Amino acid sequence: MPVDAYCERTGPDFWSEPVNALTNVAFLVAAVVAYRQVARRGAPASVVALVVLLIAIGVGSFTFHTVATTWAAALDVGPILLFMLTYVVVFPRWFLGLPWRLAWLGAPAFVAFAALVNLVFGGGTYLPALVGMVVFAVLLYLRGLRAHATRFGVVAALFAVSLTLRTIDGPVCGGFPVGTHFAWHVCNAAVLYLLIRAAAERCWEVTSGISVAGTRYP
Image 1: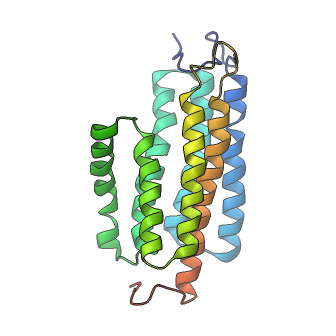
Image 2: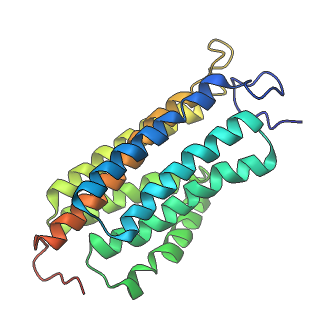
């Protein structure tokens, strides 16, 4: 039996979720645009890895919304989790200027943070990501990176809209059979692109000598 997790699915067929499946093209488009920008100006492997994971997110999500099996669900969720864990390592390295040996601690710190957020508020996998974006925006503001703080604030707001669209897929199903999950795909593609773009721009600033006073990048 297929995993029937979304409003649009009405049967076991491969194309039972055509809109949900096809809107995964948004992730691939976002990845192509991000890659062209990164390739044109250059970026470290840590940022390129985010582009690769964005492609994997699109492929994994397409697989789940067509095949709809438990193993396909793992392909759907796995790249998203890897993107989160990679970004929380990239952020302290390039935005806060921490050496890699400390930046890697961002991954276990985020896991602990996510567990705490879910313990207090619930919300599953994605609420910690939203709260984390807000925390990043505040940290950047306090460190004087006001433009980047604004970018993360905008991304957090867009992700809040995206998360809302994901959440109401079931409740609106009776009056809107396609559901709203497809809009989650489109909004999330924009969110992930903007996150990659922010990281790339910060890397370009660092390599150009634009930094926070007193911050070193060994």
